[in-house]
Figure 1 (cartoon, helix red, strand yellow):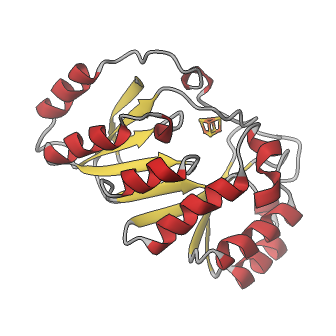
Figure 2 (tube, rainbow, N blue to C red):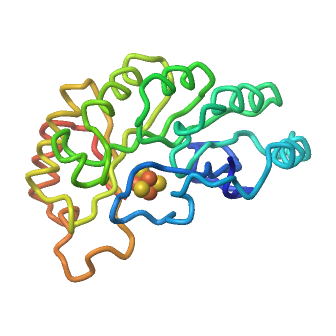
Length: 217
Ligand code: SF4
């Protein structure tokens, strides 16, 4: 179930020219979601044969294919689709929340790079994502950290939902989980009249005291 495609991007897989396949369907309901059209579990707009034909025509032009969403792990066919993309000669990327540890483990065997979205401190996952379970996500994160797969752990900071206490708690939990690099992303268009914690130099210094390799973008 593919809901859309970005045929060419330089920012979704570090250092590679990539296409992004947006998988249809996500069980969560984050308040700041920018892809509401991808949330329902409906048949995707693009069938796999069309995607395959597109990729065949891009061999030698594109280096990688990124599975994004929605939540790609919602799809039982994900590991097989990744395998096929690799057989076509592309590197494979995955953007995920880690919502399904079993499928994430299967997918990791086919993946060259993972962008892993951590949404909240463990005990606030249900509140911030609508339906997510922090303990489950951290199981996937542990699998990723102990793997040899290149990855980036990142968090979108919506000032309406995540504050100083949450971010400090997350830094501690991520460091305990073995994460060594954390990217904090500004939430586009959110809380224009709120104070963005990412503008607080003192807070960033305290976060870096726990996770020295911290980036803001
Ligand atoms: S996990 Fe991603 S796709 Fe799903 S609701 Fe949250 S932001 Fe949207």
